[in-house]
Structure formats: structure tokens, C-alpha cells
Length: 186
Image 1 (cartoon, rainbow, N blue to C red):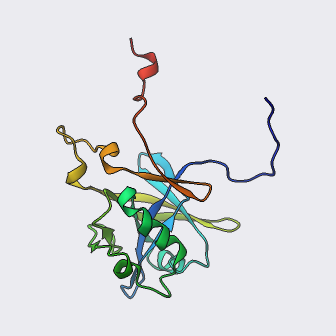
Image 2: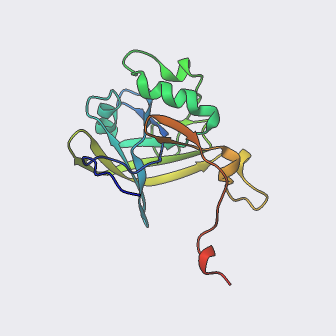
Image 3: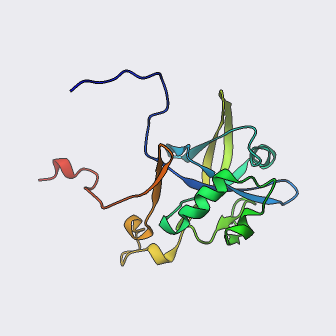
């Protein structure tokens, strides 16, 4: 069994497909899909998203230095795709996809009521890369839908039916295979 050598590229898949909500300085909101999002630090809690400068939402992040990452689910997969291929310049995606904006506690960008988890974020640093600008942001608040909490009050990821993105496709994540440290437990 051999290995083929390919040209350099982003082959780190699957990745989360998240809905990011933003607002401009006039208060106009938008929602768009980001597949390049990730955790960068636990203390302080920080995340990153990468956005092309030509995206309609890019100027909103530049103006306010805030956004909300809204996790996606099997029930949100159609809206996730739509919000990634349609521009807020042309359509009100909240209205078209029946998404419910809720006020944030720490940022002006709205949360999505339909999302099981919302991360309110404040940009700490912008890194201008090639095709994308990466926003490093501190998580200012986290909201979890009570419908997905177990009897002990912990978030039940499998009950939320989260999705991921890989090579142009959306996938529902499956069953838990282990827990942190299970390989060394006696």
C-alpha cells in the first residue's frame, strides 16, 4: 500500500461548519457560514475564524470587532449551506432561513435561537493572510440550549446532532468512541 504525493493544501478534515452572526456599526445584522473555525487557547478562552475580505460580513467584523459563533446541527444543515452560498448583500438570510436572532449579553451581534451553543466573541487580533483574514477572538460568553443538557447539567453533544464539513460535504457526527484519558485508565 503506497502513498500518493499531492500539492500542498488544506487537508485537515473534517472541520466544524458554524454559522457566524455579525452586525455592522449601524445595527444591520448578517449570518454567514464559516468552515475555518477553531479553538486556539483555553485560558483565556479564545477561538479563531478565517474570513475572505470580499465576504459581505468581513466589513462588519472590521467595524465592530465582534461576532458570535453558533454551532450547527442536522436540523440546521440546509440553513448552514444556504448562508454559505448566498450573500447578505442580496438576501436577508435570517428571514429566508427562518433563523431567530436573540440579543447577546456581551456583544451586539445576535445569537441564533436554533443553535445549541452560541459563543460571543471579541476580536483581539487580526492576522492578514493570503486569501483570508484570521480573527483571533476571546470568548466573552457561552450560551447552551437547556434542551441539550443531561441530568447532571452537562451539555450532551450527541443529542444536538452536530455537523461537520469535509471536501464539499456535510456530515452528521456519530457516536462517542471514548473519553479523555480512557486509554490509560485501569
